[in-house]
Length: 335
Image (cartoon, rainbow, N blue to C red; front, side, top):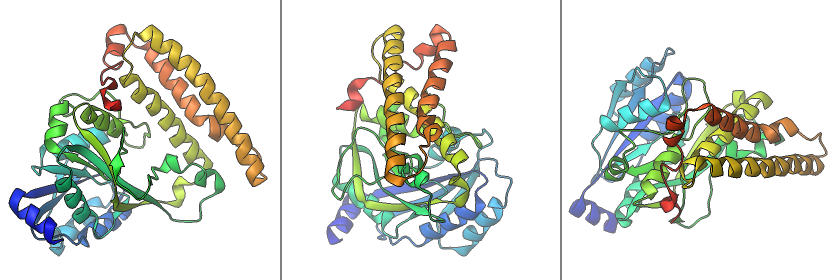
């Protein structure tokens, strides 16, 4: 700790926690409650900005409660353009810290999260972005079909040691401001992200890949947070919807790194999706055998259907529109 304080004093560390929220007041209350309990060295300059993305629930009352409590250096701002990406852009443009942390409104930070993020940032001068452990916090005991698909709920544990990664998920992503600015993401985004109740995502992975073209990406297990999964997200319908959306996102993220022609991409993605479908069916059968239950083929194939949906959407695009996606990031992010 003493070493961290010395480095903080000498170099200065500032980090802005940006929470984008849309009609999720109950969990936002818990998320801000966890943030208010952060144990952070006084040498670290940290602030919290909540971006209200057209909330129609009692989000304003929750924000007022924490603004009046004095437990947080909290500011709020409204973003009228609906969607996670516009809200994040708004958050970045209205903060000034050297580092930016995107905290989802359903994520509960460990008491040491901000401290550990600052420590890691100081110790890794070539890092452009990093993420930590995302521990799933189930509101009720999850059914097997949900438990077998932790990836659909952004669960993340890559081990107990810090190491470099090729990509990052959005929950708890910490980004060096200059790396994000230099990537061009603030000025132009290639992929859609969540809008209202829509589940198609990919904006966080796009940010990570664009930053990786010039900077290191890291996993830092010392930054731990709990991702609350309410009972409403444990229905088969929701699991299939989120799996479908993630399949579409996977297609689009992969397209960003394709450096050949669209025709070659179309051949690749067609063959890949057939293998993807075969593996998914096999996985559903294996799941049924292991649990002595009926094979849930629709859930297993939902990511493939999402992939095919994204393929179809790209086929319908004009040539100029496709060129805005294909190969826009490049393979440098695989370093």
